[in-house]
Length: 147
Image (tube, rainbow, N blue to C red; front, side, top):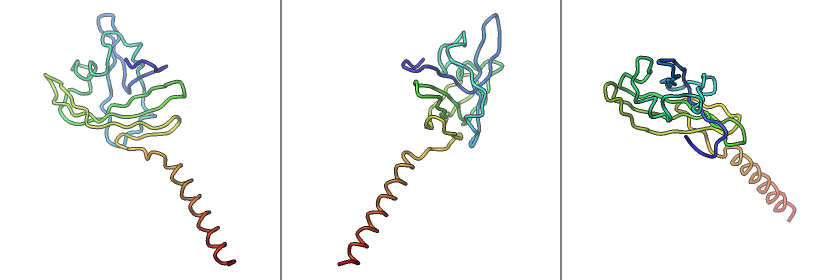
């Protein structure tokens, strides 16, 4: 569990066994819309307390039993609104079900993100900087023309 967040969840579904509810993380493919997934709140799932547990469990409901690379979608809220992201994970499959985090990214509040997409940081700021540069260039050009 990550502290300081008002909510956290992973893209997946739940299953019930022996009176416990278990979270099963979806193994998403490249380009999947993270925002459009069903999410399982981490604090509402009993039996496991962390996402690595869901990946390594290898139960009959698990989507990560086959070796390979997939994307784990996540949602979190740090008080400013929901944000979505992904983690690219490589697994060696059953029976060990070990995994390696390859890379990850998340989008700003209210932004859509697709699995494998890296949001451009500050693209709006760069656009504004470019606009300010054009205004300065026009003013210098106009001042030079009047001299």
